[in-house]
Image (cartoon, rainbow, N blue to C red; front, side, top):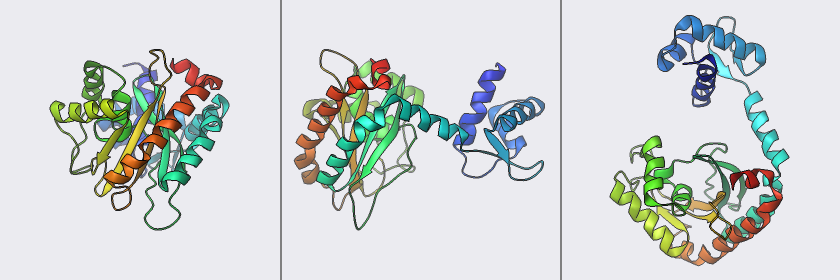
Length: 260
């Protein structure tokens, strides 16, 4: 494996770690010789991407990588285009509304609006890749492609297990295809205790007409006590309208243009 791939692997690994990690653990988990891993970490530290909690201590990411990503999104214009629409849908639904964008074989949440002003608020971290098999966002994206392509993407990422997500997370091809097919029929995806216990969500693809691939997904998520099956059905037209409006406006975004 080249030094570049090893360096990227270290960054991706540290992105998943909440606490600082010792050199030995990084090297062993990534199957990199410790001497080579140390050299790469020194380079990353000198470049400002990682830091040590103390001299010769454990390694943790800095915010430099995050800042680069946020700067790229700001330059692309996607957040400016989407935010007003997300805000309106959050006001209508009273729940968390998020936008994920397609980047190759990945789907990443990049913008949000919180509509819950009181009570339980669902507000997970941004910037994470979507777990395709057990999220409404993933199902909505996969409804726009063939079953074969959808299963190819899930096979690379793996199924999310119920003990890590919700009790209704699909763990078989048949169960997953059921979610995808129902999403195609109604035009948007819904889940109930799939991504997390006692939580529901719905999502619609942002897709231009004319056979273009989906460029993003807009979603609504909240507690089952508020965002019931009946409530999601009532919000369906507003969700689809927001997705269609964002698709029409997407021509102003360089990032969206690259997606198609």
